[in-house]
Amino acid sequence: MHIREYTEDDRDDVFRLRKVAFNGTTPSGPLLQPGRHGLVAEIDGKVAGVLGIGEYGQFYGGAAVPMGGIGGVAVDGATRGRGVAGALLDTALTTMREHGQPISVLYATVPTLYRGRGWERAGLFEWVELPMDRVLSVARPTELLRSRPADESDLTALHACYLEVARTIDGMADRRPPRIDLEKVLEMDLVSVLPGPNGLRGYLTAQREPGGEMGRLKVHDLIGVDVEAQLTLLASLKSWAGTLDAIDLRITDPATLDLLGATPMRYSVWTSTWMLRVVDLPAAVAARGWPRLANAAVDLEIVDEHAPWHAGNQRIVVEDGTVRVEPGGSGAVRLHARALGPWFTGFQNTHALRRAGLLEGDPADAVLLDQLVGASGVPRLADFF
Image (cartoon, rainbow, N blue to C red; front, top):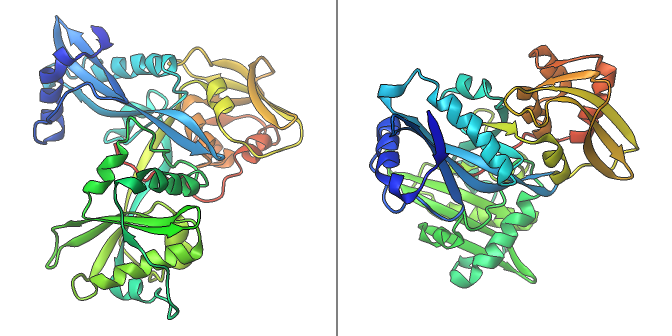
């Protein structure tokens, strides 16, 4: 088996495999696009499998950590059972490390495959259905801010508004170009912005889609930098009363739903869990934001056969407001590769990791690990790939 980065000459083979694997239409356009690269596996000179890697950044502790987004993994039916997918993932780890991507995220249809290579569930991607009567109830009797349709001149400010909120929510993508084309947002059916004195105070994007008797309004982003902006955007949806029974809201800012929305005790939720793998622990720790703690250290033994560059004894050191990983130490806390993702995002604490058999050692020695992530709320992504 030979694995290499794909080229435009592989386009037809790659699209054919993905069409069969995902039961979709044949993709259009070039295979090679800005912000993306990928791998193909060849057996006897023929493409037997493919894997794509997108260039993203994810916010943790307010800092955007470079992330490789795995997607479009497909294996030819005639070569399944020969380790093609596993070999692609092994090579992808090295490739992402070389591209400066110390963490990796994917949405898994077959979690067992990815767990075997060190990925683990580490956060949520969520949609909720909001009944229109609940949307109406958040409108304030006082005059609200005025929104207007967005145009191309708003794109830079719209992205800045998103980043102002997203950097405060662990797991959110920074939607960096060129992987994300900011101009595509204007292709949506509804894009409205709330001007402020220094940029935008908020914006809303939505798409009208078929479904049910009256169709659906899917709100992709509802972003407000303050309470007035969020309530104004929520209240703007009341114009759909009589046209829709409910709207679908993608959760970007959990405060919108949990602290401002008038959701009933029970409501419909569509959830996808994403999996994260720490590709390079020292680089990931160096790129992440951390709380300011007193000087301390924790000695780890990293068990990771697929990423030997960070396996073995490592020390996480907190010193003078910085956090770093250095080789050595006693290995007092044993962490398996699958533990690194949910710990790094704050999705699971060390007690849960211990109960799952992914962490061993004296609980007292692991206290610093929980103090470091100290995350409140569930890590979230609002982008699917």
